[in-house]
Image 1 (cartoon, rainbow, N blue to C red):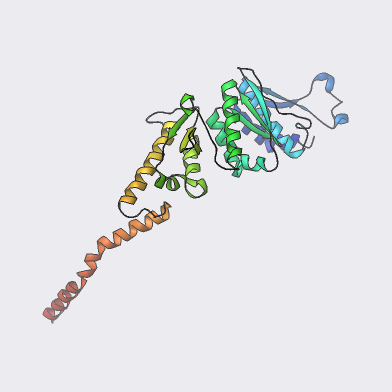
Image 2 (image 1 turned 180 degrees about the horizontal axis):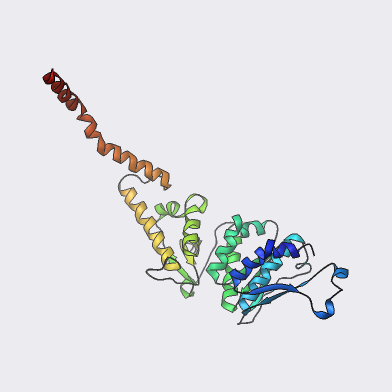
Length: 294
């Protein structure tokens, strides 16, 4: 009963957010035969969710995550890992170990949302259990993304047969551009992922060569700001920028916007410097003008 208000929110605010996110209708109710028995059973109520299958499951998992936060073990006690063979819509489960949950969640849930969006699946964490919902391809893709993410904590990841996948784009980044493209602790990759809705990381191939792989169920287009093609364009722009800087003797410059502005400001000051060198002549002209007026 202590979770009902938490899930509902003030004036249904929390339920309203979930309804809008998943395109469903939600409200609490009891069956006629349950009336008068709820208090004795701890004040529990039934939450009804109306809508399409995917929306209902997404909202249900969101509610389960909230209840588990307030009442640990309510949904996850005794739960085991599960991988379904169903090609259609179903749910798989993966149990996190140690601190894997915080790593897979990311700041304000950004990592979870990134994997969910790139895979095209529903990914929700209920306690220390990852619930992955979707059709067979979506679930398999999301499970792979999640396991590759966790494997990166231990070192380099090997991903083979990428050319046979429908959701991946390989990019061979010049050695002197890798640090520029990835950024400090992967900051540039995270920025491009957020902009394009993709999942990107450097991985080894069958021969042990490192390349950048862009994963997303959405291939994108030449004009769309989302998908693999959009991410590929951003990476190519960064590579070209780095190569131009190297050609100009500025290969070690930082990519941060503030430093780029500093460089442009210094160039502007250099271009204005001749006017400063001509200033003595203007002073002489002004002194002659004043003498003539006398």
